[in-house]
Length: 294
Image (cartoon, rainbow, N blue to C red; front, side):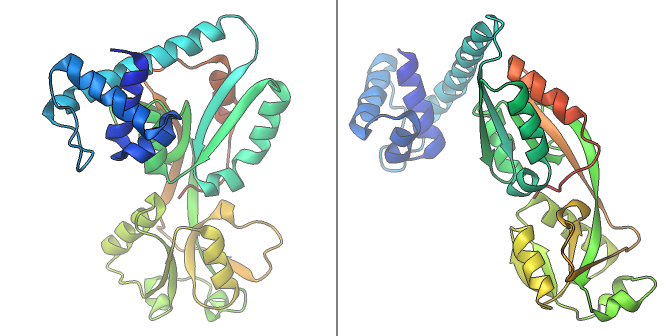
């Protein structure tokens, strides 16, 4: 049994495909297949269904143990490299597109100035996908919506982001002193996809308020939604921070009782945080306000 074989096996289980597993571990498909066969000979068990790529019961047991072994080996390698005292190495950071646009740039600039020899690798995904990658040991830190509520994740709140009603600049609602749900009536709503954390929070808030939204657009992008609002297609509820200066075609309106979105940083509880990861975490702890996360 080799570490290379375990990496190939875990990649196959996690991707469900020999082709994708080969891409993930930078091997050819025949090489991955040979590693799986070698493991099966050693274990005396069929570990993977060749038709579906799914693990057998024995394969599921091996995957759980192998994934933990690989995380420990990778953490050991990072810890040993960290002990030379140099500000080098790699920091793998996960964040949503939105947070990457509205929160990270100044902190990335400060980090790279302080640690120019560190290779910073940023992955953009939805919060739940980022959390999954942190759990698998593929990312050191994740900047996500909270709470994640996973026993293997440590999480630290950074700030809470208010949601506001956003309309075209000349929309009739802008002439009201206060806006409530009845004022929205049949107004077309442009909402974040329900698969995003913010979109799910909004829909739950609508349900509790007894409000049935007239959804015209579901999108995973704040920028797409803002463009449609600017063209007069409808209104939306967005985190304050995605409304940047110079967007003269948009108006933000207060509505009482709108939910807030918690933003924070996560990492595996049992992971070793390298010097670069600890330094970036300290930068994030200084965040007082910033961008929403989808």
